[in-house]
Length: 93
Image (cartoon, rainbow, N blue to C red):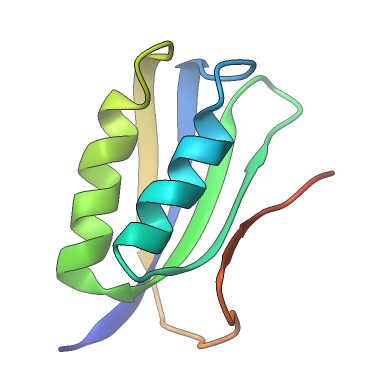
């Protein structure tokens, strides 16, 4: 399977609702590597690498988010796979 990289920013009521923890859990479940962190603007940023099909599943999940989140939009870009992560984790600013 071809590998690629997803860089996404999630907007809406997504901080303080365990969005990062649920994203970490979903990404690990899908076998992806990368990170998730809150942005200073109130969103959540995600960089994930792996098989395109699994990244598309993560992107679909990001558009819904966990039960307490209200996602108003997701900006997503596909980038070149860099193989720079050993696992998926929460990053802190």
